[in-house]
Image (cartoon, rainbow over all chains, first blue to last red; front, side, top):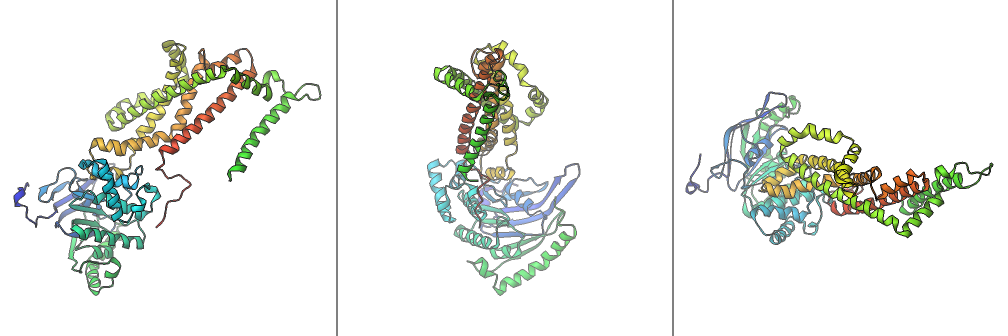
Length: 278
Length: 265
């Protein structure tokens, strides 16, 4: 499905998953179907959060959009073009530490420009500038192990954003952080995102975080063979403050509506023993 | 433990050993003779005197220089070979699978048995010792680099790929530093083995070097000479090890040391 470039209007979705199914071969024979029948579009300026019970294949979906995983059925389109190989227009923020431990913070950020052919001196200058934007100017020459979990996430965020990708894929990026740091990081993310509104796919198991951040919340069913069971717009005004927006009555209504769907799936997952994580 | 008392205690252990040795071999007992015959056990003063004499006469420096040269060459060639093959095998699964039994077999072989063959091939000069050291160092570095490249964190790798890195950039920014980490973690062992290769080679057949000197003293029952050679060898190892530690510290500055806690918050 190759759409000619000129047909691409502003309403061409940044990411479009159509009829995607992903099946893994298990060790010792057999297969495990993580997700099936996934149809999901993310607009070019849209912030979409994906929630679902543990082990429902949220990350799998993200990896399909990144091109790190090849769907066993269906296809992925990026701005109307069929995705083969890695998604060069996407940046990925991992849940785990993904920084190169042998590089300082500024080197980690600057190295992201090397594949683009930016000269090293310029890359380093821009790396420092980006570290400033995420509030780490004073920590540029530290190695990852000398930074806290939240600081490492900031470096990773700068590393992803310095390449100016059009799509941001985030896999429970603030999951390992404590509650206060998560709020600070959420606000930082919203602040940076508001500057140019890239397309975002944000996976989380925290429904409140999802509503506070996103324009749309997509709910997935319990795995295996997880599907999308709900798709809710979040029409809360921007700019938002993660901590304050939770007190908004409209926030409560949205939360109530989504939780009604999500709760069923979470209970199913627990009944299966934490969702039968593969 | 604080540094000063620790050093005092370390020196104390050495002194206690020397005093005991001295009492047993140099102080006449009831029968007018020391408890241990100095012919078999020498005395600490004799050993120190001999070592001093050799140091001053310059003879020792010559032998030390030979052994050091052999050690450095064995380590350098072994490390280069180990890194090259470790990388190659880790990135080309098929090679690793095909050669697996042969590498295991070669590594299981006691390298000492090769020493006479190397002497035959490379003569009694330094190169037969370098070859022996090479066979020891190569496998240590090879296995460590192989492991290091294979066990690169999949998340770091996926992240680097998502940053758009090509194979060459991945090699430079991800695989190479990961492999070096593992190599450095075995630096002490491999430098030690380079020295073992040199000394054992000299011991089995040479015309110079510390191993040769010890062997020479042994063949005329010169126990003082043997102990003097061992003393020099021990000091030599400590000096080299200090040097390696300094290099290691410099090169692995990015690694968390077990003592420092990570910042919180």
